[in-house]
Image 1 (spheres, rainbow, N blue to C red):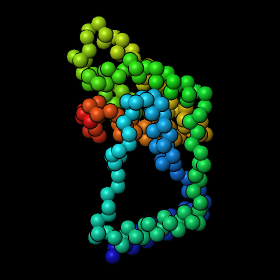
Image 2: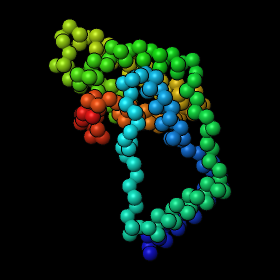
Image 3: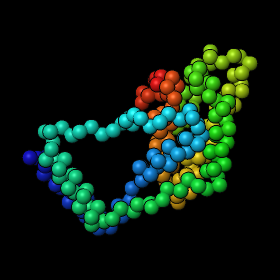
Image 4: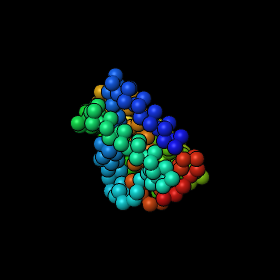
Length: 204
């Protein structure tokens, strides 16, 4: 009962804030679709179909907290009705800068693919790539690989920033990066390596 009262107070506070605050949110679903499209353009046939449940989905609420959960869902629904969300109608990924970055990454992927396949490089939790096992790379090719990884990460960082700026929301850059980080992993080919939440390397 005490928990329920606290949540009712929280709901009241939300409604008070709604009087002076616009309910703005990051369009995650649109961002995922945009990420999938760009990843398909960059990786081509190496982009696995989206046939698995993305990691990090919310779990069903514990039955013991059902009344509290219902209060929160009701509050959010009423808040959305009273204060419409500032939702972006279109998620723009068609600027010349984004197209140029995507094209450059696609051309580079042909050189990076053998290193993905061998496990020499892998996908990181921050939407970049990293050298995972130098022993998979001949000594004479290690400088070339390091340069390729540096160039790829430079373009990925520029891509996330460019998408945020193209949508007039530079503050979205971190959310865009997080979205891409997950979608790179979800759409990676079987056998490629990626970092888990604890930083450990895992093979798909």
